Length: 132
Image (tube, rainbow, N blue to C red):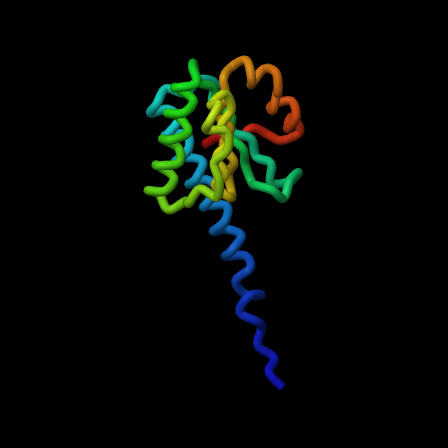
């Protein structure tokens, strides 16, 4: 009879710590990519305790559809360089609201009018703001 703990049991704490580190790293990459292209009003929310879709969301505004597209492109490109493959990008055609799904982190880049109308910050208001 083998009484050794399973490998997954002994590593569960390590895996949780690695995921937290990956989320923080991804948030830092996203924030830097948004700041590089002059995003406005960047907000990061920790949704890990209220959603199983992602651990964090980032919401940022741009000044025009062209700016929104540039922001989204830069986030996707910098995420790839850092080893975070975008799972999907939605909304590029109209570019009023582009969503970049990075797995741990979902990024919403929006025109101010769309951001005000959909008010994602209020939708996720129970989530504490994170520092990235």
